[in-house]
Image (cartoon, rainbow, N blue to C red):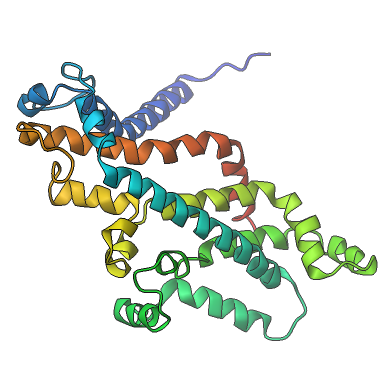
Length: 290
């Protein structure tokens, strides 16, 4: 039986779809603009004004210049290194901390949880962090990028909430069978929390991929800069500097900015479709129970 909607319900649905379409367009248009501009002819792009939905002319000159820039390849290498390091360290420590926080019955449990949550709202500040990094000999090394952000308290709390939803009887029965806490974590808790694990992996990857501020503070050697730091230098300082020695380099500056944005953004966008089916489920599992 087909349910007939009243005129009021139809008007409400039209309004909701229109609002969602408008919000989606507002979110997607900046990327669409950059994509169209990156394939545009540099001379026509300079004279163009207003909205841009399709390339003005067609040219791959910007991508040729960007891909010939050795700093882009160095940035990709460094970013992949930092993402892999952060992911390995983060996905090793976060489940361990979440499992410990989800267990019940040990002394000072609430106080320990409070200390973790406290770090989400208060920190020592930039200068103490810099002095700490320098004192441990991590300044101008990859560890200065990987270790300070190795564990996100928010991600740990989300994972801890998911672990807390696992029946306590599973852990008790595993204890009776002789399993220790590490076996219980990796054989029971993690397999039943795949959706949340996928979301946390996505959070760590996106956070590290988009990170540039720690590199600006802790990395003196430009050969160790991540891709986003190189993108910042291109966008803010000199779009064509160190990229092209052509006489018409000034005409390529605007084009190179858009091409670099696309080159730096598309890889991380390609990851989302693979974890999309886990995303909503994982977020809901980690947010229902306090």
